[in-house]
Length: 502
Image (cartoon, rainbow, N blue to C red; front, side):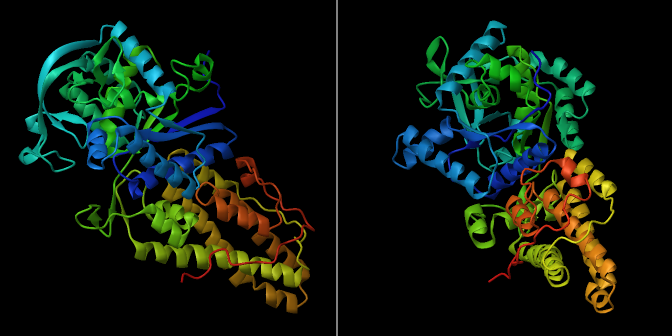
């Protein structure tokens, strides 16, 4: 049966648990959450998956260095990623761990499917391997002999492993890319992957000898080998929706609509994963969405530089909504971006406190003073064009442009107050004009609250509560429809939505 049309399946990468989460993990997760919440606005049922990748050489070594067994180590770190999800107010529906039975069973079945196609074989191998990114390299791809990402010299590995015939899928994947120019977003990432296909794909090692790596899923039929981390990890996207354990659930949700990740793992998702799926006879995902890296005050994040940003600390100091808003108001999604406390505080003061928070306070205060604290008589209005542009930007992951459109509207409402001066109109006895202006402001704030809900869910609810609007599971239709604030509704006493920073 085909996947249900009202189902939207969205994934983050599963995060590697060799260390605690940082701002890069937060950025990916919040971006996925923004889209998940937007799709719910459109009326979709959303399966939003995240989780932790818990096997591999790097984790085994980190556990040994910490003086713990591998399972104990991954249990502790995985919990911190769950806590991060709570702190970031993520609306995830599933959290998968690669040590779970549903995953190990599904991954084994996936291996057997690829092996049954004749795409897995065993051979002796020698290669340069970067433990930090769990990848083999050839010398031409090692500037000055160092891993291009981690700037470390790879280790020489010599052993007998299983290999996946990735080379056999070069032409098929190239054909798919040429037929689906939107398969990888943004397009510059598509072009990078397409160029690699021109050069040709090479077979990849997908297992490790248990003598060198004991921490992993046993290879079906060969307990002396364990699955290599990528062939294990990538299958989480299908095992989480029932591959190998729940066929009906799998049919309802697969293929995924979007796999979201940072650019350093684009190649695995855009080239290796499609080949694996083709081999196992499973449909390909709809889209691979790739974002850039974050720097901090113009510098690459590094433990040695001491500029690693702890998302728990940022949220504790500035609040979840502020953090979520800043990441996509300040930075163009898909490109590299720079995180700065100074810029965050500037956005908080100008955009949140002054533009939006002040607008809400002024509008409700005037309605309390001039309309006895009630919603005034409805006024005809139409913001269809404003929200159509917002919708178009959101669908294309253009979060910064979507928020800029919202803020153009917020600034227009503030300008309406300055232009009409309701307090002067009231003194002049022009009560109809006062009511008309205030209704435009309050209804505009209701629409704004819904538009910002994917980015700032708590602020959205606070605004709707202040406006006396009781519909707290809004859909996109309620954003575009004018006049849902009913005359006579009681407004709440205003409180600062974004109080001054201490």
